[in-house]
Image (cartoon, rainbow, N blue to C red):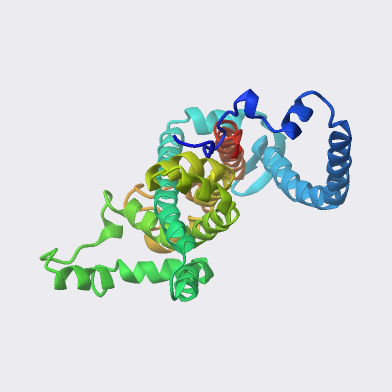
Length: 334
């Protein structure tokens, strides 16, 4: 690196070049600024407290009710009035009639979530980078990208069911015209492709949300950092890995959290319409199994236990993202 410009995100600054403001902060001379920051923080929490209380109530009450249901006895959908405590949890983890399907549905859900989130991030970030570059007609492209997210989830599921239909689906028609297949295929009726069909439908629906989050994050990065990189003759790859990606880490963290929660929860309509959990149990995810146990079979206690385990899985994912991707770096110009 040449010159006196340090453009790397989180790069260390030589002590002899450290501006007076930073030396003053380290020496503790900025107590007034710290007090002002604490007052601003307290005010922000006071303003947000009513909203946090409402959101907390909406989140905690259903969770508490699910715990009550999980430790209660139910028979044919009706409460027995008895507390069974951990019996429902023992059932989903050890009962021969429930445990194998529970473990399989959990693995299917995790596989679907990981595949969907990775595809969304890998596809959305390059699109956001292209949009951030600016070009003629960018607004029309952004509007077109937004269309899938505006389509209601049930309509999206029906649309993709038609696309994958083995008799008159668009997919078979296109593949036959391109000469890629000789006979009609049924992606949703094949146990090896059914889950991937749902992944495609899900990614198409929720990709725009990630694109616009990344685009907003890229737009907030100061141009001065890129100008410093150009003066130092940094290539596009190094600029992306040393500046864009570190500064985009908070947005990446948000995208991963939101998309993971969405993937865990909001694929239910796709399974309902496209596969009904089949073929066999190839697309039986945990939300679908939870629905079947609770409402189709009337085992509300077992379904409540599954929902509690499901909530713990989501909490584990969010905690992992917050721990591993905690933003610690800032860009610095010397």
